[in-house]
Image (cartoon, rainbow, N blue to C red; front, top):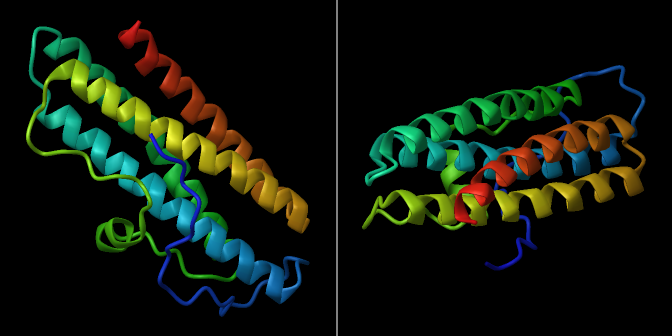
Length: 172
């Protein structure tokens, strides 16, 4: 498992919509870029979890099928919250499936095997990567002085850590 350490979002992160939020325009632009990157990664994780949910095979099928569905549901709210924060800051949420796929820093879920426990391990790796990048985003937003975005990422981090715990419990 490697560390996510670069921003790949290829979009205009200008704050183009008016807002009365009292953050300086340049700070809003940096936060919009950070949020859109996390949006791409989080939306990609959602689609990978659904892919595993639809295709999982093996002796623990029903338990993992239901677990993966529950994990996907847990990611839906953070995706929505991140996108809404982008727009609240005056930006455009870049959250389509195509943009998420293009801009995500997560490794692609392999399509050659859907063995249940292999899927658990692969998803655990991706949750760990996104959790680490989310904690880095908390630190960045906090250092930049955007407490609202830092708080949003803190809530997302808690959800990711809980889901990672569920996955790791299956691997022990």
